[in-house]
Amino acid sequence: MARQARAEATRHKIIDAAVDIFSEVGYASTGLGEIIERAEITKGALYYHFDSREALAAAIIEEATDRVIGAFRDIAQSSTPALENMIHGSFVVLGMIAQDKLARIGRQLARALGQFS
Image (tube, rainbow, N blue to C red):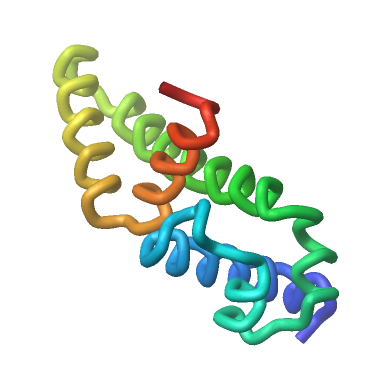
């Protein structure tokens, strides 16, 4: 596996582990050691990608936001009337928050860390 692909895979392992643990015990109760253990990586690998727990949370928020914006973008490109698109988009986002753990945790982190209200 190429170095860049390995780095990206490691980054995703870290994010996935953090999302799982944040979901189980919450952001405030999660230490980096738990994330390192769950992701089965070294401390150096974690710090290569994220210099703090806050930076990791910001990456989760960004990825969750990108997913939601992508869903809205897809809906907005349809030929249906704008009001219908807005209603449909609202249901899609609610569905994502209910079913997509990363989207749900990203939203919770954004609210908890004061990035959105």
